[in-house]
Image 1 (spheres, one colour):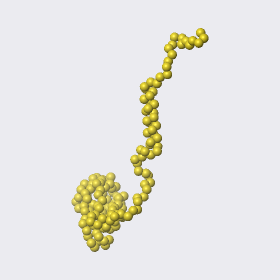
Image 2 (tube, one colour):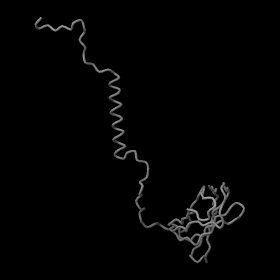
Image 3 (cartoon, helix red, strand yellow):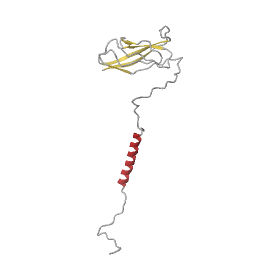
Image 4 (tube, one colour):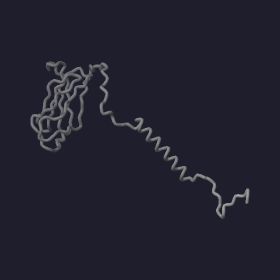
Length: 166
């Protein structure tokens, strides 16, 4: 029996790759690619924990219009007068703001001091604490002035919002 190769009744197998093995290999390569992409930051849609400070480029001042910040909802804590909220005056404005928060029935909850362009109000301290609930059709009333002393009144604005107290 020299030179002959016998299989003793079994058929010799050829090395062939099954379609399932090919599919699994392709999926593994894709999964490794996605993991590598995520590790190098490709999927990072969350802002950084410590955002970089904004650029301090000069802002072009508006001369014929006033930007008024709008709020759809304000979220306050029930039973407290001091709230964790401020109202900004955009830096492109040329005027000072005086802002009031008013309920639908006309109750004035808060009025700011003068807010210079590019600055924000002190924290809102309500004249009276609010109970839990939703206060619809409240308003932020903006009075605008050409000077910090409030001698030259300009156009104002009113923006409706809902106060949600929890």
